[in-house]
Length: 321
Ligand SMILES: O=P(O)(O)OC[C@H]1O[C@](O)(COP(=O)(O)O)[C@@H](O)[C@@H]1O
Ligand SMILES: [Mg+2]
Ligand SMILES: [Mg+2]
Image (cartoon, rainbow, N blue to C red; front, side, top):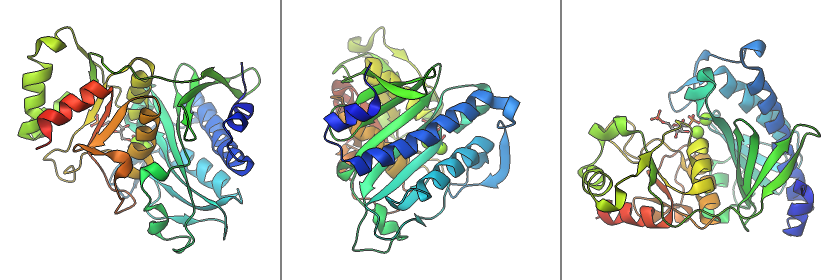
């Protein structure tokens, strides 16, 4: 089985970027260990604090954020970082080449039930035309990501990553502690009958979104025999789609603050959109290619339609007017 670094070298990834990726993965191994210890290490449960999104932070949200933040700010190739759990951009090393954004723990509501959780990350080139700690560092379109990936803390710890080429899957080998290549080129089937959505939100959806469910998913013969899955962790739903196809939906809805849904552009939608596209899938927001969206704020949300090309197109045909 091929190890991570030789694979990245063969992909012509420069050494400095390889070293930065290794920093992120070193933090992910520490998080994987803490997650596996669960109550033994007292890491389950919530804190009394809220993040800028108004979400009560889990202890593991805070712990995984601190691990990534400390290791990244210790890396002298990092100019700045942004995180779901940090209100603002945190400056790193002056003149350094890269900036990193991350969702330290995706699927937080699964922490206390031993459900699927993960870490999502993305790397861009640092901008020299704005201040190191300016939000504008991260006002870059998703198509300019240098690297995007997630680590899934499931039965096995998996890394799914692209550096602009194929989306590849690596498995953490606990015997020597390294990630080994287990899927060289992930491919999302163009057409499937599986979809992922929190159906409990139906009442808050737009008429167009309801029409897609009523007329397409529930009524059309094409979807007879289809099945629904919802992991309550986008990384988990994403990994199923990377593995066997399907559609992930988090539409906008009428609840306060959800006019653009729940998923954050910078450290959730953009990295997963790049992985999906490089695996032959598609990722849109209200019909627009997510990777073409010009970001306007650090924690902005976008409605997400991601997965098998045929299903994404069908959803947009019905819902985008
Ligand atoms: O609670 P809901 O509405 O089902 O939302 C679940 C979604 O929220 C998220 O958990 C948000 O991410 P965080 O856990 O990182 O806050 C997604 O992973 C998941 O797809
Ligand atoms: Mg998340
Ligand atoms: Mg999170």
